[in-house]
Every structure is written in structure tokens, then in C-alpha cells.
Length: 376
Image (tube, rainbow, N blue to C red; front, side, top):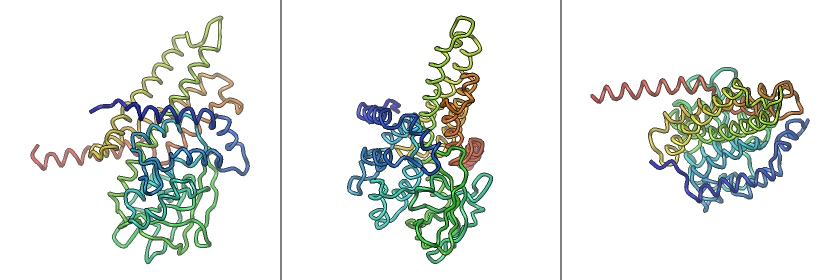
């Protein structure tokens, strides 16, 4: 197993970092967050579409760049570093990925070119209220080409034109594809912990929809979530690393008692522990990215461990960033809260770290039981 990225892949990452440094500074995130009307940055969305990132893993004959998931996770890491206020994760890691994996030829021809070009934003509707999403208790119904039910919160739904909706079909959970325009879908904005990334409630009332491919099923939905967890995890690692770098520079430049506070042992220990936590999560991510890119069966376990580790690393980085900036870390003018907000938003977007850790335990137990049954 080679965990080193190729020169071409590193070039993709370098290009992404340069582009985002120029076009997606933290002031761009702050501008959307402080706006009363903006839900994302349309200029940045157009720019990343022109860079080919929205269709990174979409085949060229369907309007994409024809790259692989290793390139996409590196782009995701840079998106995370910049706190880009665009619906990248939901549209690319979930909606586009779902159609690419499970859509039929007609659905791919209709939607992938539009998603890859940025003409349409996609989202993924799973949760139906407070608590961890549970496929067994999904109440939204898909019958006879119609959707009925309520989904909330739906991440990045404000800009979305199409949604992949987890719903109950005649024989269990299915993925349904629904356009969000029209009188049969009611979209209501919800207050978001990170206003630079939106939340909404979607109410479907006999909304026209179609089964995505053959409908998938519980196993297909879990696979989609596992794959999205890996890509989102790299976005979290990017954010955590940037938060650490900014905090390190601040502590090196802030003086107390005639010396940088970074020289005090208590501060050094906290920075060292945070750095170790981020790098441990990153190593989990490299393994998960390998499993994702090769289609290895280890993805089911690797995604769980990486998702939990990346979520906790980013949340910890946000917390330490505020604490180690001292009193100014709690102010609106400093950028610490931007990282803390995004860490919380991403952590909730696919289920909490504790939920993924519980899923890891269940899958390990199932794997162990299977080995026992096979006599190994």
C-alpha cells in the first residue's frame, strides 16, 4: 500500500490552495456569515465550477473532469482550510456521488453535467428531526412517483435545486430524486450554527420524484454515507490544520512576562496534543482514502474511524483556537468563531462522532461474528 500522493495529485492540491488563497480568504466566509440575505458566495461557486472541482470524479463524457477520489479528497482538504462558504460537500460528496453510484443512465445524463457545471446545486435529505438519523424509522414516504414527508435539518438546502431524499418505499428505505422547485415542496430556512452554511426544513406534499436507479436500499445508503464521510473528513482535517497554524502563529507573537506565550510549557503541551490529534486523524484519513479509491471492503470500518477522529480533531482545534487566543478569541472581530462554527456544522452534517463510533463497534462485532461462523 502506497500512502504517498503522486506528483500530479500534489499539483491538484497546490493549484487548489493557490486558487482558494486568492479567491476565498476568511473575509469571504465572514461576509456571507454576516449577511442578512446571502446563503453562499456565487462568485466563488462559479470559480470552483470553472476549475472543474464540482465534477472532479464525474466522467468527461458527462461533463466532469474525470479525476479520481484521491484528487477529490485533496481538493476537499483545501476547501476545509479556506472555510469556503459554498455548498460543496452536500452537492459533490452526496448528491453527485449518489447519482454517479446508483443513478440509471438517463438520470446520469440529465443531472451530472448540470451538477458538474454548477448550474444546479444538489443536497441530501436524511434527518427528520432531533437525534441521530435512523434508516429504520424514516417516515417520509415514496410511492407511485410521489414524495410525502418532512426533512429537517437539510444541509445547504437554501441553494439546492435537486435533492436526494432518503424515504420509505414498498420494501424498505430507498433513495428518491426530487426537484425542489414548485408548489409541492415547501422550503423553510432554519437558524444555522454556522450562517455561512445553511440549514432548512423541506416539506414534501405529493412532490413529483423518481427512484434513483433501482432505489438502492439500506446497504446502498450506508455505502453512500461512508464515502461522503471520508470526503467530509478531509474537509475537517483541512479546517483543523488551518486553525492550528493560525493559533500557533498567534501564540508565537503574543508576549507575556517578556516572552512569547508559546514558550510556556502549558501552552506547548496543548499545541503538541492538538497537533498529534490532527495527525492521527490524518493518518486514518489516508487509509480511508485508499479504501475509497480502490473500492476496498475496509472502507466500512475506515470511514467510521476517520469520521470520528476528523470530527473530534476539528472541534478540538476550534476550541483550542478560542482558548489560546485569550480574551480576543471570544470576540466577533477575530476569526476563531468561524472555525468553531464550521467544525460544529460539519460534525453534525453526517451524524455525530459518537454515532460513527457506535457504528464502528457494530461493524466490528458483525465482522467478528462472521469470522467465527466461517471457522477462522
